[in-house]
Image 1 (tube, rainbow, N blue to C red):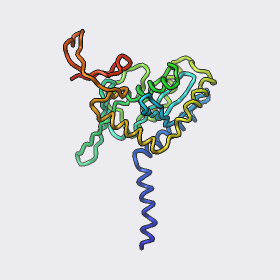
Image 2: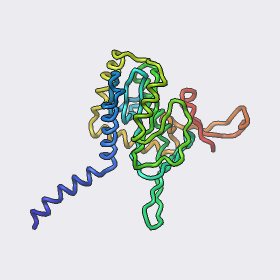
Image 3: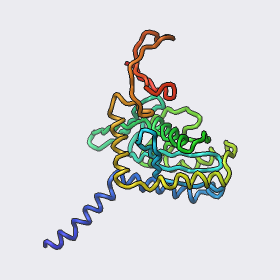
Image 4: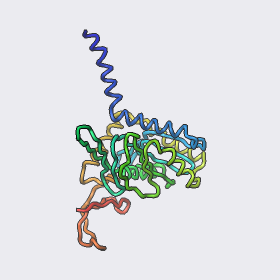
Length: 257
């Protein structure tokens, strides 16, 4: 009997590992990359990278889930693998996913605004590349998630399910002029390629830093700087106190008190 138990224990461990959020997320990102690779648009000479860890001056890193480098510019994808109804606005710090768990139970989970998150990724990506290349922010959700109430009206930001990704990319492709040559695309690709090979320890450090920023009320969620108390000097809010980022004017994040 004991050898049967020993046989099944590794299978249980493997099954648990394969069903973990991290592994599901990685599989989802790989599926997106494959979809972009085989898309007809790919024939135009674009290149795809996944899980790029961009170094920051603070010593931390910014992780880009999927990057599609094309003649139209950089398509930066932030992937969310949630199931349920998705609610969010470009101005809200937290978005919400609601899942009906049966017997009248409703489960809600809050996550950091992916529009803000990807904006930070793009900022550090451009800093690392040393150039202000045209970029597009794509927030992609699993087909198991329904975009119930999404209020995002920024011209360079697109929110969609995986099933609609090809259509969004085609729209970007048809509506924008070429800004990169094949040679420039290749140069960007090979400059970023080494950043996709971080060790497991380095990846865990990155995840811990992100969680700390999200939960720390004294850290700017936009750039990672410190929030300091300030007083408005002009305008309708003159005299009111607020929290502002210490990296102003580079970062203009504020929070009302």
